[in-house]
Each structure stands twice: as C-alpha cells, then as structure tokens.
Length: 336
View 1 (cartoon, rainbow, N blue to C red):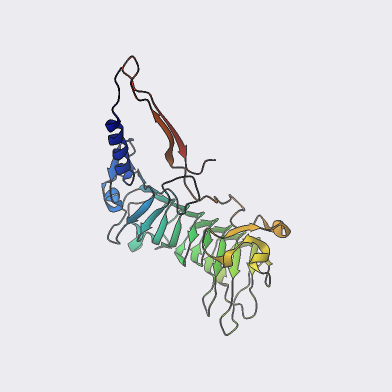
View 2: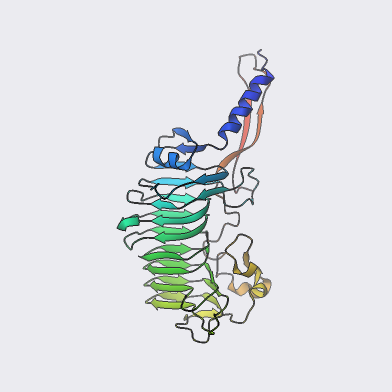
C-alpha cells in the first residue's frame, strides 16, 4: 500500500482554497468552466448556462449586457445559514437585454438595479428571487412572464405597464403594472407630497398585500394609492390612509392608527431589511393570509439550494488494490 505524504495533502487543500472564490459556470452539457470575474463568466458562458457565485464581492460595469439565457445563482444575501461562504454581493447593475429571455438571478445582494428589456427589447420568462436589490426596472410593456418573488427591494420599481407578477416581496413603492399580479407583498414608503406608494396599477390582480404608509408631509397629505383602474382588488391590509387621499382601496382592511410594532413580531419601522419580521402577533392572526407569509409563502432564510461540502474524509493510504477511500458529505443551502 502507498502512504500519502502530508505535503501532498497540503497541496490539495491549498488548491481547493485558491479555487474557493472562483466562479463556476455549468453548461447545458454539464461541462464546468471556472472564471475569476463576473463579466468574464457572463461573456464566456454558453446560452442556457448556470453561473454559480460563491460568497464574496463581484463587480460589474454597465457596459456588460446579458444577451443570452443565463441563470445567476449566489449563496445568499445575508448570513443566516450554516454556509461558511457567507453572502454574495454584486456591485453594480444587471442588464438583461435582447436574447436573454428565460434568464434568472437568485440569492444575491445587488447594490444596483435589475434592468429588463432595455432599448424596447422583448425579454420574457424572467425570474428574480431571493435577492436584496435596489430596484427592478422593466423597460417596456412587451416584456412578459417576468416574476419578481421573495425579494427585498429597497427602492421604487418601475414595470413600464408590463404584465409583471410581483409576489411575496418586501418592497418600497411599485409603479406601472398592467395585466399583472401584485399579491402578498409588504409595500412600504415614508410618503411625501405627490409620491404614492402604489401607482398606475391597471387590469391586474391586487390582493392580500400589506401597505405601510408611515407618515405624511407637512401639508397633512397622504398619497398611498393613485391611478388604479379595472383591477381585481381584495384582502389587502392598509395602514394609515386618510385625509386628502387621492384614491382609497376597496375591499381592504384599514388598520390606520395601529402601530406596526403592535401588529407584527418585529416590523423594524418598516425597513426593507431581513431584520424585519412581518409575522403577525397572536391578536392579529386573522390577517395571516395577507403579507409575505400568505399565498405561496416566504423563505425566511433567503438562500437557494446551492450544494456545498459540510464534511470530508480522505484515508492516509490506498487499499490493497491501490484505491484511495474518499468520503464527502454535501448539503444544499437552506436544508435543515
């Protein structure tokens, strides 16, 4: 039998450590290619590939446009898991342009926006899930089957009258959806003069959302909703719309005057942050079908099931037939 030298083991460990921050791109054939930067991975990936980003920071310039079907998967946007890789941060904006239909981005903290359909390009069948992103900007109404699900969205999103499905997000202000679905979201904003929380929603389903408008400006003018027309509206919970409201919301539950801390386990002032916990307290459980935990529900861990090594064992020597016994236990992020 052959004894393995300790120096050989050190070489293996050092090699794995050097590869840890590399980006893996898996093609539709199963071939794997490693890259060191996100732009290189995007440019080098074949259409239909999956780009796996480990924990760490990855920069991208606005000059980099995605013009093919790609799925970008990070390890998660905040460290609430046993995964030692931490979080995945993309610094910059993502641009999904003509040719990128069928793409997705999941499990990333994105400092900028996700832009879809720039230059009037038709981009369809897009998914944004488990991300913390500045905003989502759909550039034209020809973009369809765009799904925005279970994200933290920190700024105003504009969907340009597209039929986008916005579900189970914690988000700040929504603008311009036509023929889409807006359901089971927490929608919040510290309102100012003529800045509605939700505006230009038409011919859509608008249901089971919780709308948090935290204050008016010095004129005492609340502007929570405006330009709603021909929608199916039901089951929404609204905090604080009154006075000179442009448009109230029919078939809604008005909790004006109730402090968020009275209603939720931890609303954290309505912050767009994983620190907030919008589970209803016991006295308000009758509203539990509303908000992010109703409908299809919300993933509190906000991490995609990316496989990673949790345990490994390598025998010090080969067996009688010259084979080396290697045992590796792999777990998917988010598994219990």
